Image (cartoon, rainbow over all chains, first blue to last red; front, side):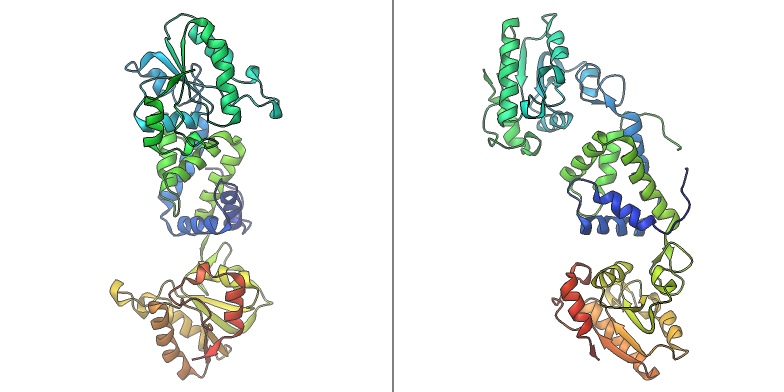
Length: 202
Length: 202
């Protein structure tokens, strides 16, 4: 373990770093810092190692661009998954959200974002080409567009349905039922599960 | 950096460890984990190192039993502090809360808990003996009892005032104004600052 010299600022440094995390304000950072100070050294070490390992070991799956710790992600590697359907999402966290529902047993494809002219993000900045090449061999019969039900998500879904339908692949969209303008990541399991079951052709 | 073999569970391990932190539920743990996955490796490394260093470098001050990164804590080491008054608190985090107010310029003494018969914690389980020995040389003219305004905090304050007053030392208590049953750690700076200024002899 390489360690810096003791400059007497260790606690402040921890508070600063914790404060950078999403949803962690100064008071939460302090509660966590004091918790770690009171916790046994092993618990703190496990957390630190978990942070380092996740950066060392987690990379993008070369097939679906979700997070993977082995060659491909757990879903792509799972022979029991239905390989005739691909669920297209914006971010890896959306895969986790859908997996939690237990309502979907096919494969995924992570775009790595959504079409957003404002941010100069078009199809070529996303993993669209890779999606189309996965559809080339005709083994996939359905593509479920599971981008968020907001403006950019809808734009992206509309664009994808337009380029995929010509390939003779059934294109569906998550049923609305998700609060419009809401974020798929925060939808509860039941709502999201229903939205998958009631998906409609677009 | 000693690292474990890649067992494909790095992300789950991080979620588990984050979930142990106070105020971090499954969704928050996930948001933080994905933030770290998306953050550059250096930010994640800084957080991990800060956690490890805080455990390596922070210990209890041998004088006041607050947290210290050098031989004694920053307050005990600060020659500009008023050494004639000692503010007695339950936990090191209470020192931070009072320091934030900027209303107190004396020294501290951390008991390391409060008297609690239910949990079999009496004066001998706390740093009371060490407090009394700090009062022995007569250099301290006032002891401010800043335990929380709840049952155990009041019990502890009553006990301490009874053992300290005979030494001819002025014993004061934070003014009520703190919500009774509330927690000193979460009092806002203004309330806590006023409570210090309006402290009363007990």
